[in-house]
Image (cartoon, rainbow, N blue to C red; front, side, top):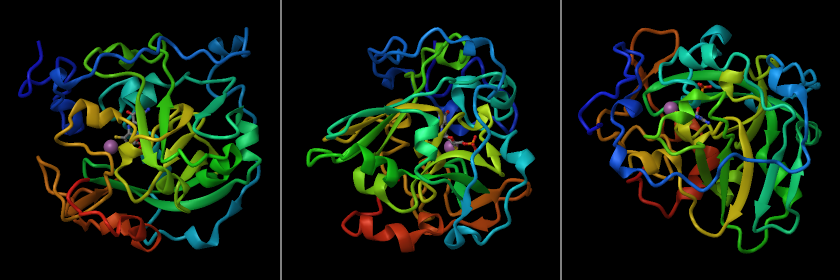
Amino acid sequence: MFSYHQKPDWHIADSEATPESKFLDRRSFMKTMGIGGLMLGGFQNCQAQSATINTMLPPLPDYTKNAAYKDAGRAITEEKLVTSYNNFYEFGFSKSDPAKNAKNFSLDPYTLTIDGHCDNPMKVDLDQIEKLGLEERVYRFRCVEAWAMTVPWIGVPLSKLIEQAQPNSKAKYVAFTCFYDPKRAKGQNDKRYDWPYYEGLRLDEAMNELTMITTGYYGKRLLPQSGTPLRIITPWKYGYKGPKSIVKMTFTDVEPKTYWNTAIPKEYKFYSNVDPEVPHPRWSQAREQFLGERLKNKPTELYNGYGKQVAKMYADRKRDLY
Ligand SMILES: Nc1nc2c(c(=O)[nH]1)N[C@H]1C(S)=C(S)[C@@H](COP(=O)(O)O)O[C@H]1N2
Ligand SMILES: [Mo]
């Protein structure tokens, strides 16, 4: 069995193995949630299962470049690195696994269900989301493991989608649920984890101008390893706050549970804002390593450099938790 100080049997003895996975504490897991495969009503009989990547997805529509976010103060990370060094535990625990194991993965035909405390619950497809207005924004990105990158994302501000759903006065948070398909996503058979992956934001965080629902990068659609067909991006938070391949968004009145907090509550908290002065219990967050560079020599910035847009949301909070 598995104890806190043992390496799991899938541990890969190289520097790429992730700190999160090495210290997984099985006992802290909740029972698997009562979701036995997400069936989206009405979507039917499609041969998509045998299709190769993105064959059912239309080409990425035209997009504008948001001038306010054309320069993140750092060089854009090489596309090859962004698409080959990934965290997507559904497809393996080593950084090189997702590109390999998610190669033919798709969620076509895709539907996002929006429900919970809102006046206009709905199911939307990719086209309906992208019609809200695609824009490119270059954002800094910071993983809790202390690596960082800069990516030209293409997507829609999440606020635009939320406005369509009309959350009511009970809606205080948004919970995100990722896809569940253990036949194709082998990592989801690992019972030490609570599948599907899930995350959440406070409603004002979800509505913040920075928060994006992204469907592309580098001028193209997201590759499977990056969260086909869409993922959430919150650039002032650690990367795990941005769930990939989500299929559901639910407005809630209570703080949603999150995958990493459930796995290791002492190490991963709900807020998870990037903060150089709040160390991870096992390593400092003061510096970070830019993908493609050899050293952890870049100073970490509070809110990953996005204080102007987000600090006001945390005026009343102690900077004690992630
Ligand atoms: N569904 C899902 N979403 C996920 C993850 C995951 O394992 N599964 N990993 C998270 C973590 S820890 C990070 S750092 C980013 C990694 O995104 P990237 O592979 O595009 O760099 O995705 C986040 N979203
Ligand atoms: Mo991460």
